[in-house]
Length: 188
Image (cartoon, rainbow, N blue to C red):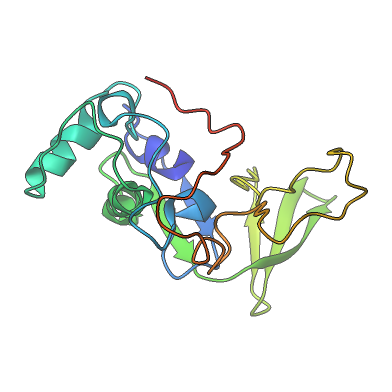
């Protein structure tokens, strides 16, 4: 999203931005690549946007796609991921303010500093090396680590699921069963 913010900044910036992301599509990360539509955002549509200066941007995008665009709904993370993906894909190449954004669909495997000119050398999985004056580590959210001090000595019952993103983690939950969801952080 930082690359998207740069591409939408006012002014003229002759910068080259290299977006290194090994995922099949840039910008999704763990949270918005959720494979199931039941995985909802923890923020209502009217309170989330890719652009701080355009708080209704997501809602407007929903409506432009023929979706209801209800500001009070918790939409699927998949849907927000599609929105983010579209925001990123629109700025790949050259933005109107002179910024050029190139996506490298692979992993960065090493980074060093060239002491002769104080630039960063970022080595990609294919051996290509990117030289840069600045490097941003936009790592996103990591998978949950689970409970460590539950008094169970690290032995959890089979119905404890520390990571709902794990494929198949929720398939064994029967309909109408009571369950406990820890720290959902849903906000009105």
